[in-house]
Image (cartoon, rainbow, N blue to C red; front, side, top):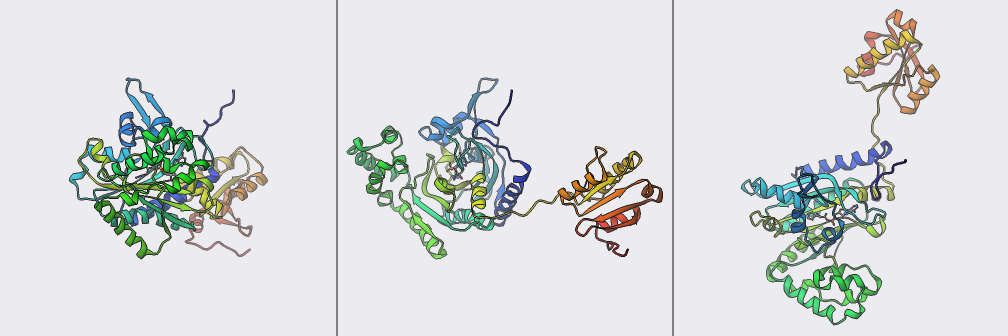
Length: 425
Ligand code: HAM
């Protein structure tokens, strides 16, 4: 019987780790630069949290959640995203009692039963950023800039913002009525999926990718024409900040996002070169979510970004991350007696904080040297019976194959760079 990773999941082999380490390290750096604090929430939560939070007419809740009864009979769901869990934690721990706003970030896996394709997986990693406790459009801009800064820091070019406003409970219902009646008059021309969504979640019709629906979307009523004065003013202020920054952005009236909790600002960052999945991140404001899940009425905004899509973008742009450093020293030995000494030396060097490895397996010196070469170590140390008798070690500098015999007392000093490598022959 042969096993494979489940469909839509993948292994991250050692040769891929440099990308992952780089993205995670830059995320910590940028988030800390903007004053965001790391938070961890569970990988699974009560199913009802996502049903209420993400919304039961969304694709995520309707068909993508990994939901299971636990052994106590409670329904649990692997998190399809972080926002609902972070809001649950905010409400549960009474974080509204602390100085506001609170700025959070999290990194970890999320799970959605989707049709796998390039940049879309069933287990994927998100970088999630949230600011809870502020209505100010300057915070909307700040959150958008965290995303931008992240990608720029990773060397990604060709970025642009897509922005829209989705209104609020005051103005959205009027718009939705208008949208429904617009589509109701044209129901015969709608694709099957849009027909199904028309009454359950009409906003999502603007998101349809089906060719035949495109002319209808273009001519559909636009939410920006229906915003109440508060939402209109909020969006205008955000746009004024974006104008002043002179970053490419487009007001995209089709941008509605696939989660129900959004109010006012929604945005994505698009990067060239990753095809159909060109949104590297998506987010927006969700001023009603915390109250909806039982907390105090609290405005908030955030975004999430899939690490796989960031890495795909880096690769398509030819960006290579800094190489990960391996051990600096390889110990080679000749014969049984030397092996025991090599075991001791290897551990002694690690104790001195010098990364050290050995091939073992009683292989020939040639094979041991080849292994050191493959690993790219700076030095190989050779121990034979002569060296052991004399209390010395032969040290080979791999860059130029210069080899010297040194005393055991000088060895650590040389490896630490406190003493010159003895070049004289
Ligand atoms: P989302 O648009 O569902 O929003 O996902 C955000 C990002 O996660 C996407 O832009 C994409 O990079 C990545 N992503 C989503 N699904 C997959 C998948 N199946 N495979 C690979 N990558 C994926 C949210 O999750 C919201 N919680 C964002 C948010 C935070 N809004 C406010 N705060």
